[in-house]
Length: 60
Image (cartoon, rainbow, N blue to C red; front, side, top):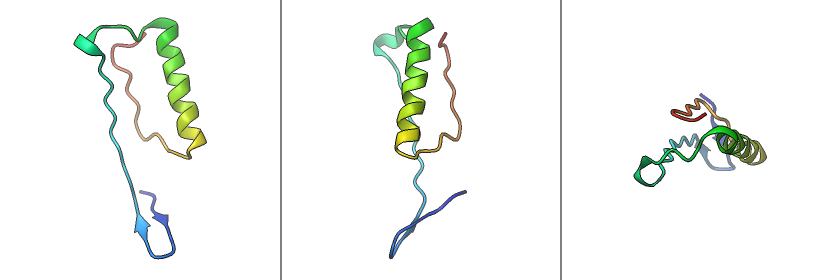
């Protein structure tokens, strides 16, 4: 567990993202799925966000 510190604060923020396409249509496959993974990881790295657990169910 990692805490962030501000001048008068101590905090830990955790988010859970669930990405579901309309009607659960399987559009995130193959090259598209790989590119989405890359973009998510690059974005998290740019904003210093640590991915604790990543599950890409049904992709690929």
